[in-house]
Amino acid sequence: MNASNTPIGLARPDISQKEIDAVVEVLKTPNLSLGPKVIEFEEKFAAQCKTKYAVACNSGTSALHLTLLGMGIGPGDEVITTPFSFIASSNCIMFVGATPKFADIDPDTWCLDPNKTDAAINAKTKGLIPVDVFGITPDMDAFMKLAKSRNVRVIEDSCEALGATLNGKPAGSLGDAGVFGFYPNKQITTGEGGMVVTDDDQIAEIAQSVRNQGRGSGASWLAHERLGYNFRLSDINCAIGSVQLDRLDEILTKRAKVAKMYDERLASEDRITTQAITPGCHKSWFVYVVRLRDGYAPEARDKMLDALREEGIACSNYFAPLHLQPFYRESFGFKPGDFPVCEALSERTIALPFHAELTSDDIDRVTASLQRLL
Image (cartoon, rainbow, N blue to C red):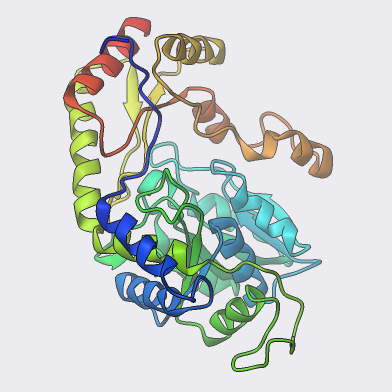
C-alpha cells in the first residue's frame, strides 16, 4: 500500500516510552488500584485546573453522573444543556432521575447560548451543563451570572477542552464543578477515564464516596454510607494520565501545529467555515471540524463523508443533534425544528482526521480530497 492510499485515521493517542515505563513500574507493585498513582494524578490535575479537589473516575460520563449526585439533583428536577454535544452531556441527567432540557446554540461558537438558556429556565430548573465544544469554552461568565440570578448550579463539561482557558482561567474551573474525559481521542488519555474538579467540599466528598461503592472517608472496606458504584480509575490508568499531564504542553503544541496546517490549506476556501472562538478563550485543539455553507443539503454532506471514507480518509459527522436521537424523541417528544441552529449545523459538519502525528503530506491529501468533493 503506497502513501496515496494508506488509511488516515480519525484520531489516535500520543503515547511515548514514558507512559509505557510508568505502567510497567505500577505492574511491579501490589498497588494496581486505590494506590498512590491515583492520588498523584488527582493532585497534579487539581493543580492544572487550579481547583481545591480533583476526583478521578472511570469516564467523563461517570464524572458528570457523580457531579450531579454531589449537587443533590434528582427526580422532579430539570437540567438544561446543549443539543450539540456527545450524548453523555444529557444522558447523565437521566441517570439521576432528572429531566434533560435543551437550549439552542450560538451559530458562530457552536456552544450553548446563554440568552436562550435563560429563556428556558423555569421553576424546576436546578442545573446547567454548558459544554466546552471542541475545545472552546462558551461564555462562562454569562452562565455564572445567570446561575446566580436564577439560583441554579453549573457543571462545566470540559471533556473536550483540557488546556483551554477563558480570560486566563483554566477550563473546568469556571463553574461550580467541571468534568473531563480521557478517552483515547482526547488531548490526554488514560485509556478510559474521567475527572471531577471543584472547590465545593460536598461535591468532592460525594464524588469520592459514590465512585467507591458508597464508602466514606476512612471507613472500613465493608462499611457503605450511601448508594455507590464502582467508578474507580486504576493506578495503571492513572500512571498513564500522570505522564500525559506532564507532557500536556508538548501534546497541545503538536496538535496546534496540525490545526495550523489545516487552517493554512483551507484559508481561501469559501465553501466552508470553521468554529469561532469565544472572546477571551484560548482554544485547546480537540478535533478539526468544518461546516459546509448553508447551500449544501444534508445529503450532499453525507455523500462527502462516504467519498472520503472510500479514499481511506476517516471522517465523521460531529455531532448529531441529541434531541433527535430516537429514544429522546420517544421519551420527551422532541422533533425536528425544535433547535434550528443546532440542526442546521449538525447537517453540515465534517470532522477531519486530527491527531498529533499527522504529517504535512497527510494534511495535503485530506484537504485536496475535501476540496475536490466540495
